[in-house]
Length: 307
Image (tube, rainbow, N blue to C red; front, top):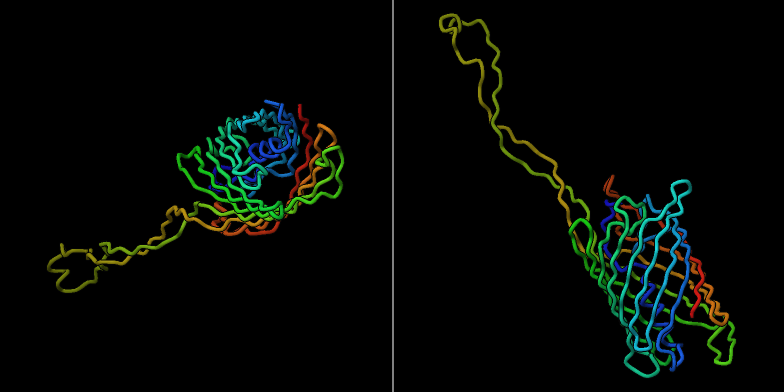
């Protein structure tokens, strides 16, 4: 688990995004609302990456959002790994959602997350201590939404990294219900590009000159007979080539993700299902130091209730 040193904005940047969605729809007279939910992920990944030890997880969550845009969210992590299933810890995220215009076509959010996850946990977030995150979005005339994100990550191995996302999405209502016509069935085709720093080991070679002694075979000659204490070794200089490895950290394109979030609102209940198709780039297997860039699929599903 700790061999995975890839640092980019977590696909689960959910608390801030959720807070933004809810503050858009909350009644003007409501000062505070509460959302409780649970989500299942078929494989918890990080920035288009998945570790060999990654497992499916269950994420119960609780979010408080004020009318002013302040929010705090807590998420629990339960790995569903058969007989080895168990509680792995939780994360706490305070933050602030803001908009630059009355229609909320332009805005963003800032947040900080502290992770309290068991060091030996198989889930991919166990290598993080905390993150600082920020997003800005533009959705002119509600046509298409462009979101850019940046994250500064503090890792348990005392290394810090900057990570980024760029996302393009479009909300499409397949069915509108309710008096405000804001409930119903909605799909949101989304394309996300991940980039950031990652660590890998680079092999290089060095050459050095070393001296060594070489045994000289003694033959029976008149000189050896007359002078039996002649040196039996000679000193030579030899070139030695040595293979070395060093850790290199570079900013690179990490992954591309296509997803199709499907949301169905029934009064205060929100049902969610999102399939993902992810293509990682420049991924390194730290055991064999080889690339692993295969395409893979995962999905999330869950339910939220707003009070």
